[in-house]
Each structure stands twice: as C-alpha cells, then as structure tokens.
Length: 325
Ligand code: SF4
Ligand code: MG
Image (tube, rainbow, N blue to C red; front, top):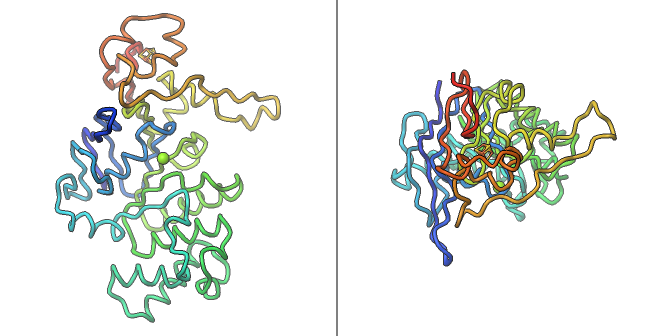
C-alpha cells in the first residue's frame, strides 16, 4: 500500500545571487514495509527533498504534490502537517545531539514526546519510554532512561533517537544519513535495527545517504539524485545488477570492494557537484561524465534529459541510453 506519493516535487529559494533550484521535478513513492533509498552527493537535493516532504522548508517555494496516506501536504494548513509530523512521520538525523535536548534525560524526552502525541499518563509514558529503549537494543533500558544524551555513546545516541522517533508509532521514518557519523560496525548494527523495526511494524522508510553501501544494505527501491533531479530510479537489485546512468556507475566504482582486499583503489568521481544557481546546460552531469568526455555528443549539452523508462520499473535520465522497454 502506498504511504507516500511525491509527484513533480520542486523546491526553489531566492538568494542574493539568484534563484537556487534545489529540487526539480522529482517523483517517487514509498510503500508500507518498504525502504526507498535516496542517494547522491551533498548538494544533490536529497536532504532538501526530505525536508520539503516534512513541511520543514520555510522560505522556499515548493511545487508539485506530496500525498501522505491520501492527504495532500503541499499547501495544507500548517496544523495538518504539524499533526502528521512526529506522530505519523518521524525523522532521524545524522547528529542525534541536535535532535535530543541536552538538559533532559533520554527517558523524559521520549516520555514527553509520547504524552504529547498520545495524551498518556506520566506513568504510562515513562513505561513506554523504557519499553521502546529496550526495543532498540539499549541494555538496561530502565537505568539508562535516567541518563542524559552526553552519557550515551554515538551509537547508543542514534538508537535513542530512533527510540524517540518510534515512541509515537509512526508509519513513515525519514532517515537522513542516520549512520554517517558511526564506525562501520555500529553503522551496520543501527541499519539492521531499522530493518528489524521495519519488519515488525510495517514501517515505510526513506533512507537518505551519500553511501551506496548503505543503500545496498537496506533499500528496496532507489532514487539516484544529481543536481536536484533524478538521474536514475530502479528497484535496488536492478540498479546494482544493471546501473545505466554514468553517474550511478561512478558511484558504484567508488564503493570499496570487500573481495578485492587492500588492493582496491577507491575511485571517487572527479569534479564537483553542479551549481544549483547556474547549472550546466543540458545534462547537469556532462562536465564530469566519462561518456561525454569520450564522445562529445551534442545531445548531452542540448535539452535537459528527461527520465525515460529503460526496463521494468527502471528509469534513466541519460539521453545516450539507447534501450527502449
Ligand atoms: Fe553523460 Fe550525456 Fe548521459 Fe549526461 S546525457 S550522463 S553527459 S552520456
Ligand atoms: Mg544532507
């Protein structure tokens, strides 16, 4: 069942230098019990997309449609969006310290959030806080509920933030680089935790990351963003088996390969992300594209490439992708 349907989403800001087009015409859906991975470099529009969905992008012009469980959020009264936020849609960020208040214990914060959304008694809310801390794998949850955020390790703080997000029993979690600050082992544990919670509760998850390794671990469907637009969209297994966009291929080449041992050389994609104020003509990726460097095809610098279907549920925005479905 479709939980979130985003159609032709655009986000623009006015700045002293001109209009920044942070997101241009992005479409995606998130089903209950499934994870959509949104991957791209910083400045690709992936975080802006999630903030727009949450109604948190003040001062921006937002166009298109965001339907959450049938309710249109773009242009909806602030009260409607605020009620959904926290209760049915929750966010998990990279830095738990910005989400958790330093002066209140972890248990009190979760209990307060729960009371606010469910109107429970103090006692019931406290019990709920301890339960949910246990659910996210925090040992001795009753004792640790009485501790402050600074007393938690980085990984435990991420778990506490996930507990805070879960305490309101959301249907959708938007996670923006939730494990980027963690070491690899803890990162894997936190991602596995999210996947387990998803299975238990049928959560829809939007996982925003710059790391295709994270996508490989958790995503069912993938949206690859570049310069504010979709470069490629596909079910995860298809994207990894048959990456079509040269940018996606570049991201895959920059993944460390476990089987190659120390001999692997990490190949980052040369060049930097495009300006969103004055994007390159045609395909925004052309200044960095190895195919364009080789072929100098004028199609790459002509019209902005549209996303085209190249396979079953597989879409690519490269004009030189010949295959028709
Ligand atoms: Fe590269 Fe051209 Fe395809 Fe863009 S449209 S990704 S520049 S080959
Ligand atoms: Mg970001």
